[in-house]
Image 1 (tube, rainbow, N blue to C red):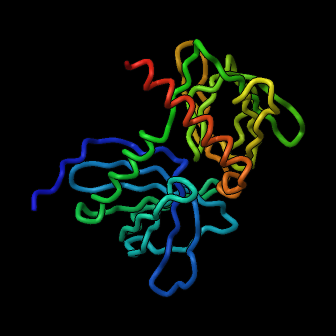
Image 2 (image 1 turned 120 degrees about the horizontal axis):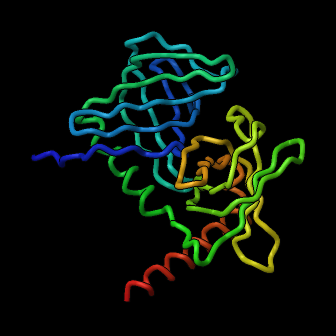
Length: 232
């Protein structure tokens, strides 16, 4: 059977991955990951808190289980540990997945693209970032999915840059209603014109809350309907 060709692409890091070894029972160790897909293979980088990071030998084969959003069907792949690095509080392993194993991972890329809704800045949504010391910075929501969001800020402050502890994001999804508060982690920053685009991964246990999930899902469905109407 002819294998589909995978164009190079990156699945963003709000996808969660569990690492299981041959001798390990249970659900494995969970971390945040990004996946670079190519025709012949996939390269997966998974970031763990140092307190729970697995101890793997380079070249060791493991089973990776990927979940993009609560309720979605997990995807598994066999992978080889290729490198390890530590920043003190975080440890990152890079894994190699061969072509036959990497084909199902293409579904994650398409699933993420389908589930993420770009927010029209002509109909903006206010977003506020808060830390544990009640410092805050207001921006505008750039895009949203059940697994995370991206927020545009005019400028950065040093306290906003911490990626090793939880932060809180408040989203004004439905004006006139209380803002939705979701905790998560900073996963990316990049320039977007004259602004800075911050990418956040929601803490999965937060999204599993019925209230949070329902409000996110309702907003995504409404914006998706608006997009379809504009196409008519």
